[in-house]
Length: 396
Ligand SMILES: *Cc1c(COP(=O)(O)O)cnc(C)c1O
Image (cartoon, rainbow, N blue to C red; front, side, top):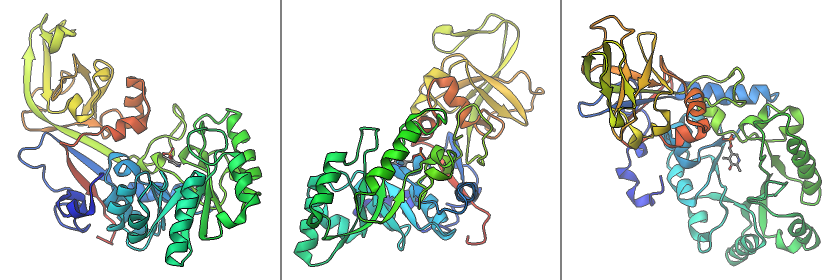
């Protein structure tokens, strides 16, 4: 979603939410291989659940990378309607694109202030999350130039060593208050490196460091917990939660019961159903050979759509409540599924079969099978899908 504003009218998610072909279960388009349903009501329910788990501390929404592949504009618009007032993106251009969808909300740009981005940042009312002294100086100079204080957040490095001001830089800011004086400081943030491991001592170490560093700076609101961080308990909540993945249904702790509602449902078109005799090698390199007469459905989704090759032989599709093993290699545009467990004739060419969610494996199960995390399954979801944003809320 890194498109300049001028191209936005051509972007399918840029149309006003509520257009009939956007929201709701319209029929699959004739030429489409797979349909990705995103349950906006479930996203809103997850957003509310996270805040409730934190005793009512408000939750922002992290919608970087096109809301983890699910469509930043419809997702953010739905959350804004539900009362979400703070959004985080990674890139400036993501923030510019998002502004259309949430005209009144605060949008924070996690990657901070790129050189030369001052005018664009201001024009779209975005708040840079500054993480170097150079960025603070540049934003301060811009503020002095226009004679107005400019809104900013600061990112403090509490031990992840990825982004953020280190302690020496924070000491410089404390010793030289003129550096921050031109800025309207909105938020101090830091990011947990291992929140999904509740037993990892780095969580508490980072929390204590955040408290200590924060005390050196002006007293403004603080944001610390990502999705899994919300489940680490009250000392981790501060003033604003900052979840991404959990909004989209990803389990906060792998392998444990998931308190979040599922959001993603991918179903793909059946291109052919064939009964193969015993001893037939299916797909590239004959990675699967039938041992008995087997009904195989060839289905229109593949690794070019983000269905990882590593899932060959390790995942289940589903139809009519029955889990169906995906067998043989994952091709670029196709997978093959053993549908012998279904009654003969139950599945035919042109039907749509669940591939992620619904009767198929969910995002976290697929991630484990592929040796990755739910985040990567979501952000890899392909560009060829027909995306449908489903909501039954009255606002539509
Ligand atoms: C991506 C990101 C988040 C959201 O993390 P989740 O684990 O998806 O909840 C929060 N804060 C920062 C700084 C991030 O980069």
